[in-house]
Image 1 (cartoon, helix red, strand yellow):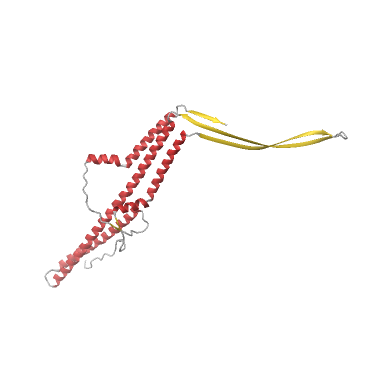
Image 2 (cartoon, helix red, strand yellow):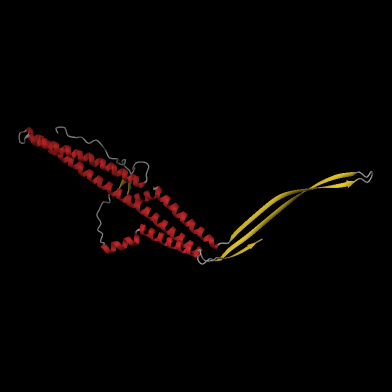
Length: 289
């Protein structure tokens, strides 16, 4: 207890003169760097392509074929010489090339809504994928906001811990001075040393927490290197008035997870309708040449 702790760990602070980024700037950085958003955008593009594929059921189908072959035929004939009347054998062969081609055009005229149900199901699945992408985007924004304010809070707690260590050192110096002149017992000096050691231990923990918070924000932003900028202090309190009914209505309207589930439900209903209509006849027109 007579040897106070010395906190040596330092948090990852940005370099001097670094630029300052607001919360909105950090959200823009995360939306541009997070690979999960690119994956979600690719899923949406795939769903859009499947909608176009479903529309192909209304388009005419054109099929073509071509074949080519070569045939060789040979025959033998007997000939009689005019001079001496002897018989001879004459062999001949013929090579013929054969080419054939065909075109077939098919158009669905009426299918009792089978293609329409398939298109609506594809559109519902595309809407579900868009809602999932929006969910992914909101999750990224939430992680950035949470890590941003956690870092601000950790740095404020770090400042409080540094101020506490400073005050305890001053109290220890005063206790030692009073003990040297005989106005305070040795126990006051020991008590001040214990308080200083605890404050320095809390300072070390606060610095570690600030370092972890900075790394958490870096991961949320999708950055490979350390943070090379300072963040603006936006830890002010804002009053929000919202009752329970308004909160539920806003959640049902804005939660993209719910919108995705509702879109999947619509897609399942359209799938059922499409399979039911498969039992009905299909009217089509075909032409071939």
